[in-house]
Length: 389
Image (cartoon, rainbow, N blue to C red; front, top):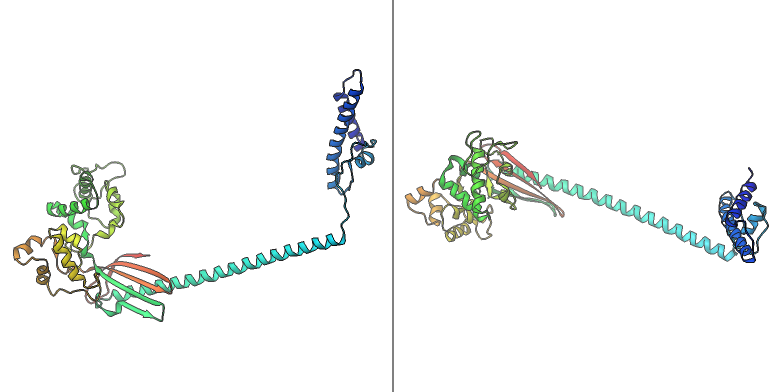
């Protein structure tokens, strides 16, 4: 069926449905014409959109009715569908100017974004190179400090290259920390009391302390399927290896350790290297008070040892000549007193385990390397642990 036939047939059917067969009054006739005009207007508007999309320009609905639908125009349908206006030369020039300004704005935005991207790339490459230099300087400091003849007093631990390139190394003994393996070994009540006092100062309750200590004892000793009073039984995936700790990370795997490992920097207080006894050359006043030394005496001793700057491992530290001088500063002069502390403290731990921390700096970037090593005479130290920050 042709296009005109479709619209005309549809129009007649709608008219018959809208106006039932009955007596037609003037009012009914007006309503019929209004409904018919509304329907024609809607159909014509939709048709105009379709025809316009195919390039047919229309000025009004009446033009559509006359040209395409073969329907007589209605004076009440004077709504323009796609009005056509003539633009003056000034309007055309104004539109061209706006378009040119908009294109200029887009080009400027693209150029500025491109320049910003290049700047970020150059900055990122510079930071990467500086970070690499800082890391290399930190590694150089570690290599120097590992030498057997280098001590905490050696001037080679600090070096500067140019104006903004340098490294600085500090050496501290592992003997200044609490050795977990030593405190748990043999289930010595004196050593276990030191560990429990430390846990109490860290805020653990009595029950938490007892559970953690018994679980640690089960972890490093005992026999399979046996446990201490407050320890945990072997069940599921939890099976203590019954051997000494080989890493401080293992503590987090022990049941009952959550109250301890949730504390910040708890690993800084423990070690698994060395003879196990606290070294008077490195132990803090807090740890010395744990073994029975009066807190005031321990603080005075540490101040003398650290020197004016209040830091261990620096050039102004006081170097004790021997153990007798060190014990004299602690007020321990008799052999009986020294013997009572011999199982907990030592002067100059012969095991020779140290923490070596090197900080490399390049411009405003720094990199830190920290290792735990055993320094032996006549050879470079053996690296036991390596951490980079």
